[in-house]
Image 1 (tube, helix red, strand yellow):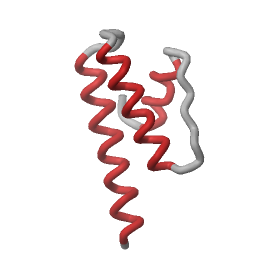
Image 2: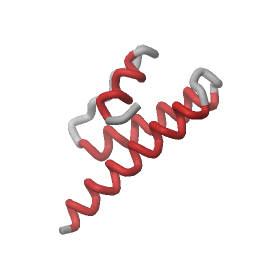
Image 3: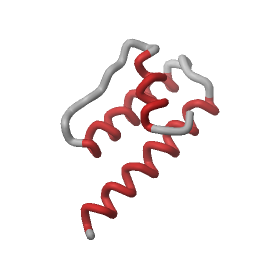
Length: 68
């Protein structure tokens, strides 16, 4: 996984499509879904860590952009 799109496709494989309209809220909900999948031991640790890192980076960039 290298992008938000990759994470969306990954989640789609589990039947999960997330879109709220608010980009930050969508990304945060994707993070929660990944946590649930990880807790249920449905995804590998490496996939979980990579996806969370990408999502948190994107969320931070959007929040910083909003503050400017």
